[in-house]
Amino acid sequence: MLKIPEYLKDLEPYKPGKPIEELERELGIKNIIKLASNENPYGCSLFVKKAIEREAVNLNRYPDGGAYYLRQELSNFLETDPEQIIFGNGSNEIIDLITRVFLSENDEALAFQGSFVVYKLVSKAVGATFREVPIEQDFSRDLNKLLDKITEKTKVIFIDNPCNPTGVANLKEEMNQFIQNVPDDVLVVLDEAYFEYAKEHGVPNGLHYVDIINPKIPEKNVIVLRTFSKAYGLAGIRLGYGIAKKEIISVLEKVRQPFNVNYLAQVAGVEALRDQKFVNFSVEQNEKGKAQLYEGFEKRGIHFIPTYGNFIMFKTNDAQMLYKNLLLKGVIVRPAFGFNNYLRVSIGTEEENKIFLEALDGLI
Ligand code: PMP
Image 1 (spheres, rainbow, N blue to C red):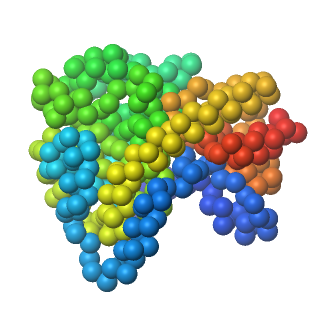
Image 2: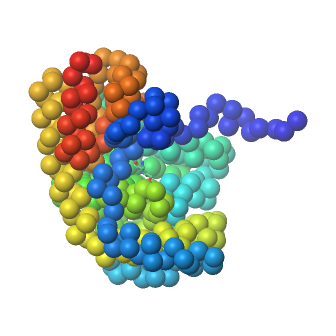
Image 3: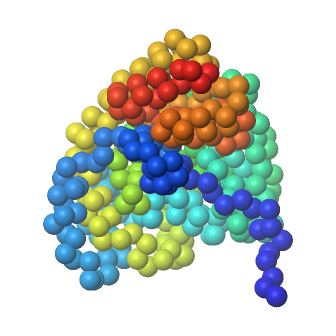
């Protein structure tokens, strides 16, 4: 009989947003809209598409395990040393690598209540204790409470800034203070998956806490995570990265799979970085979509949490029921994990947002 580790027994697998194809199969309907996984509704850069078409004939060879060209491109773009970057099969992979390197059975990871669910999953998967720090009534997060919960067992702190699913963020001043006060033997994971959407709104650029930009705090241990899945519109290609001081990156590099980032992802990443016009366009459209949804919610008397991301959490009397009824109308949203009466909707195109809002009528 195989022995399953005790700590895995009550671990629930991650539940992704429902794929369009699955709902099509289940209901036999077409014209489904998916606003469930915080994807970019505008696709990706045209240059990426062209490059993938061009390079699709080169798949017989293994990719460059060191992702040389992508590394050069990104380090130029961020003005970092190439050795301060690790690439992953999505930033999810890097979250996983972090737990494998820095957490084991006697250690503890900390995060705010209701943070991105993967933190809990991967921390528990290595047998570590995962502790959640309560958030405030209005969903804001008090970084001092996080500091108070640090014990000598705490090895890693995860902060999604902005937070998925609530959309709230911690701003520059409070984050500066927090980082200054974190003990030097704790790794802070600043997960900035939605950075491009948030950066104009007072949310700190985590690179300031990595010794590249601010060499004044070199003793602090911060890894910033970013992704091509959101504003770059490349969720399907699976490409994310981490930036930290070399000592942290080099140890993560030891445990990653040699070819974790595939050839097309590397090609796509280079082209995507060169097309910042597309990113800016996506962010501008997101602002418009946000205003459209806010207005739609207000008109319908629906309580929502103002967001720093490309998604909005909103309140319902019966989230499960509304989720199911929206599915029947061909609209896929997402239960907001950890917040029972709430759903999360990703901001779509103007047309998608309109369909979603109209689908709510009669259901609420
Ligand atoms: N962090 C946060 C906060 C997220 O919301 C997501 C995606 N939902 C990720 C990380 C993972 O993104 P990816 O693996 O696609 O880069």
